[in-house]
Amino acid sequence: MLCALALTVLVAGWGIFDTAGLAAFAARQVKIVLVSRGWFVMLTASVMLLVAIWLAVSPYGRIKLGLDDEKPEFSTASWLTMMFAAGMGVGLLFYAAAEPVTHYLFLSREMEPRRAAFLALTLTDFHWGLHAWAIYGITGLVIAYFGFRRETPQLISAPVQQVFGVRPWTRGVGWVVDLLSIYAIAIGLAGSVAMGVFQVQDGIAALFGFSPSGLALPLGVFAVLVLAYLFPLTVDLGRGMAVLSNTALVIAIALLVFSLMAGPTHFLMNTIVASIGDYAAKVIPNGFQTYAFFDEPVAEWFQSWTLNYMVWWLAWAPFVGVFIARISRGRTIREFLVGVLLAPTAFSILWFGVFGGLAFYKGAAAQLDPAVVSNNINQTTFLLLETLPFSRLTTAATIVAAFLFIVTSVVSAAYVLAMFSTGGDQTPPVRVKLTWGVILGLLGLAMILSDSVSAVREIIAMSAGPFVFIVLVLMVCLLKALKEEKPGRTR
Amino acid sequence: MNALLDTLLNVMVFAFIGLLIWLYFKKEPADSTRDDLLRIRTEEKG
Image 1 (tube, each protein chain N blue to C red):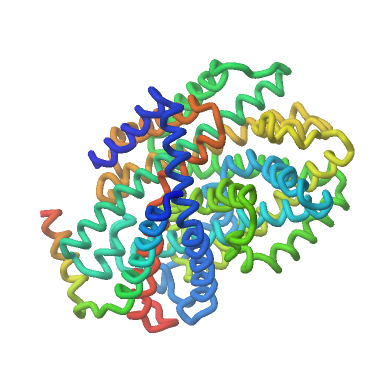
Image 2 (cartoon, rainbow over the protein chains, first blue to last red; image 1 turned 180 degrees about the vertical axis):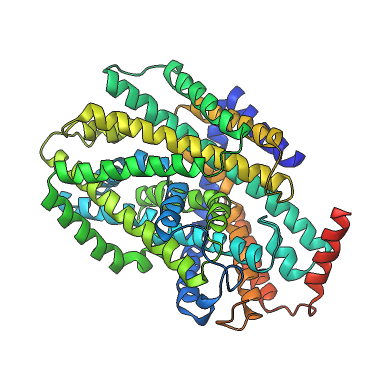
């Protein structure tokens, strides 16, 4: 606990007092690791997806995550909603149109614009699709399986000692695994806080018609955010947080439906259907694509986007994994994996089909300048909404949804961090939760001071690097434990 | 990038993959794990 605290406080302090130094250090480290081990990150994500598919269709899929007479705690709809809100959150709002347009700008240098737009959507779907959810799914499955079926504490390290016994080396590995999990969660969440604050500040600027300059507005938004999330940490809100999280997702879905109806509906539907086909055809090959025979700009794009995303999902895996495990008790492995893999992926394809398709349509009609992603990526979603009716209302809704996503994520993360740092205590003391709330705030502040989304992404990637090894150890623990199960048997 | 550093970083990955394969096939003493964990948890509670 003290080591984890010290490590995260050290990074926060470094970020606050020498923001440029931390960003430059992170960029250097990430570059070295991603150039050298990019193949390993892609291979890991693909292997996790293939293992998840195999477990879902194999007889092991019938094994229940809990006792055989247990029923799921949440309805399937509620389960899927909570899972999706936890896994994607504010990133979806941020990158809705910005990511496809960024890829388009890069690809259109080399290919015909229509082809570039379509490929940009497929690549975005790939980043937010099955591979991301396989990383979450396998991590969550390991925690749920060992927690509910083998009754281990809900710690990332617990499966190691359960499978390999309590030995000095498993204790050592377990300690390191928990330390790195805490560190990855704290940095990953703080990065999302910073991105959310950037988006909210540009939303407020768009709503009231001024240009944000300096750090006064983001720091003001940040201060309100900290006040908003510290209170829920002092009381047991129980399902209250689920309600807030679902509210954010309902607003996001309303924005999706509104944009589909108010925009060029038939074009967007064509885009979505075409994206489904292209994604399905390329998902497995893209998972093994390492751009070995491409030139330097493509390699740099691959590191900045595809590899960075995979590492980002790894950074979030311990947090989202614990969360989706907690809400999945009583489901079978098959139900769990099918739900975790398919539902969020389908929603992501819909989401980027609508907002990406709309951005391309408005760009072709000269109503949206694609160069916005180079000038100020935070504004992309708001500039796109301005091309539709009721833009003040939709802008305000986006700000509220972003704010709610951040608050619920930080509250949940502080809870998970407190649980990890108290040895798996399901009801950690308020002071521990508050401590983590404050540390997440400090880390978020460090990233806001960097005033750069790419710096935030690199700091996250640096923190999550070791987790690529941890998820594979966890997967081996699961596969080894499953060998002892008679497939299809329930307890 | 420094070729030696690149080689070292990749050799570590190869060693890790080898370790994973060894861990997967390694035989564990029957039922010792659960007993160990139960004993440790009891000690911690006590």
